[in-house]
Amino acid sequence: MKFSSPVYNIIPVPIEKIEPNTYNPNSVAPPELKLLYDSIKEDGYTMPIVCYYDSEKDLYIIVDGFHRYRIMLDYQDIYEREGGKLPVSVIDKPIDCRMASTIRHNRARGSHDVDLMSNIISELHELGRSDAWISRHLGMDKDEILRLKQITGLTALFKEVEFGRAWKAIENDLQDEWEEVEK
Image 1 (tube, helix red, strand yellow):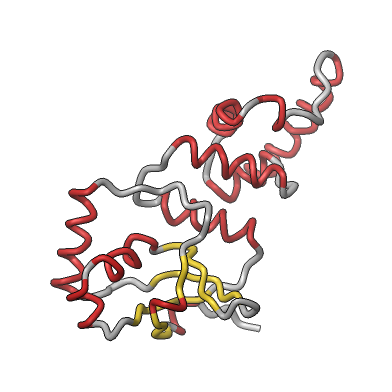
Image 2 (cartoon, one colour):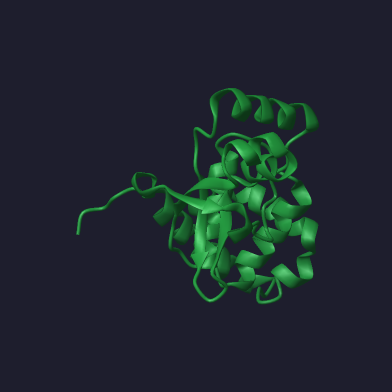
């Protein structure tokens, strides 16, 4: 089956059927948020909101585009002009891959709240994702992942690691995994 990018299937979705995700670490300062409003006011929505459709809730969960969504909620003139609908591109991925998508979208253009990024690293770890997976999918190097893990607390994120001689074996195993990622 030939791959087709989700952007070729944009749908108009009432804003009432869209909700933010619970893990987005991206923040936009007030001047940039005002600039986003000005951009949407002048140019319209030029990029869709990326969402996951939750059929059980009949809601679209934002993967990327939270601030474009916020503009419609916060500015009645935009809401009215757009008829209360946002352009949505739907992706169908499990939660860990949606988190990775959010980070990739954000890192390509913005900055992140360190504490929220640390929480995402912790959640991905709890979902069973390795540091190599996180590196590959979120575009982080080993040191950045380690620093973010340290913020949330070493105990929880390193509970399965035995230190001492066993650490070297695990480190070697991780090195093999890192080398595989870099190929």
